[in-house]
Image 1 (spheres, one colour):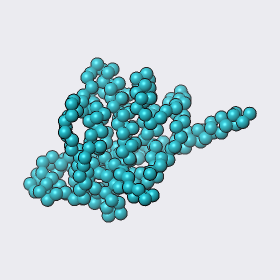
Image 2: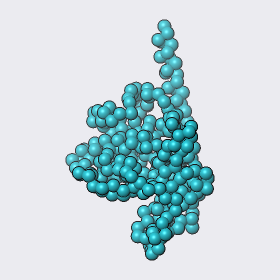
Image 3: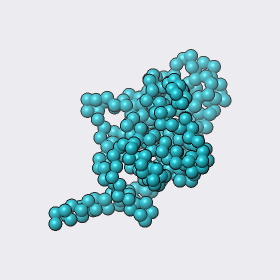
Image 4: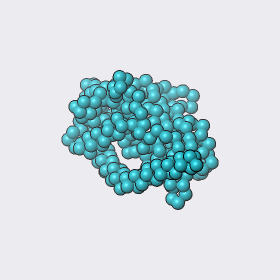
Length: 282
């Protein structure tokens, strides 16, 4: 099992000049109660915890994925299907590079049927099977993560939350579900402020279906998908890569600048814990 780098449930956050001491579990009930009372502010705070609560294996894989994406050139992309490509050629290129690096990576295609108000659909993403410690665990890679949470007429605070999500998601299904729950509640709050209905394609059930539905793993595109691909559809993938790389580079630069702040917060947290321990001893 992949253990998180951050294991404590007692977290201290500094938001502006106001310190928050938050006790919470990884449960939807407490998340909903806070999101309803302090809404998007709390969602933003918890997102930072979820975003950085990553195990060592996932952190290493994330670094590899970032490097491989940034090293890609347009000549590395090859047509993989007829019709709209929707960045499939980027995924297959990334899978090829990951497999050459020794990872058991594949493109996963999931499909699900309509159920009640939840529309049917399909989704394409990447997984890497981690065989550490004698177990096998899937690590999910989604190269267009933020697009799943875009909503109409979002309030500014929701846009800030959306833009603080990772550009490329790399992590477990468990952590992914936590982020989905958080973003659903944040979207609900944003839409409510503008008196707008909550669309079924932004519901938790629909979002979970993308990664939790039955799927097929593919290491290379099917031959019949490649035939008849138009150059105009392939241009969309090149455009996606041109947008993806600068976004990823900006995210990495922002995180690099924030590292001294994160280190200071970590030291302050350790100091606070030591001080509380000394008070208990008195």
